[in-house]
Image (tube, rainbow, N blue to C red; front, side, top):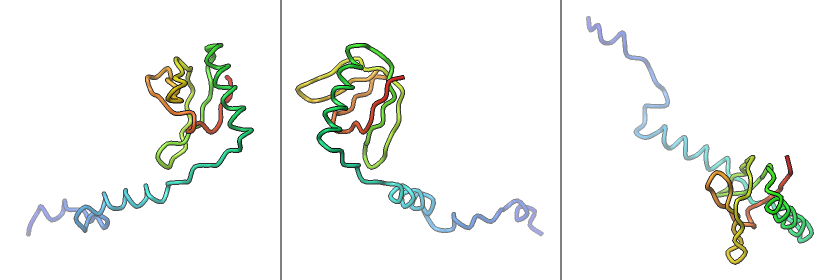
Length: 106
C-alpha cells in the first residue's frame, strides 16, 4: 500500500494547467465597470473643491476612477499641475482631474 496516497488531497479547480490564473483573470474582467459621466456643473464644482482643498491643505476623502475600478482614498493634496491637469497626493501618487469622481472634506 502506498502511504503517500493518503496525503494527496483532491483539488478540483487545479486540474487544468493555469486554471487558477485564468479564473482570476475572468473574475477581474467581470468586476470592471465603466467610468461614470459627470455633467459640466459637477466638473466645475469638483475643480473648485480641489482648489480649495489644496489652498487650505485639509484632508479629503477622494473617489476616483482608474483602469475600470473606482478607488477611495483619504489623503491631502500636495501639489497641483495645471498644465497637465494632474493632482499630486500625500502618499506620493498622482491622478488626473478627469479621474476624480467626488471629493469630500474630512
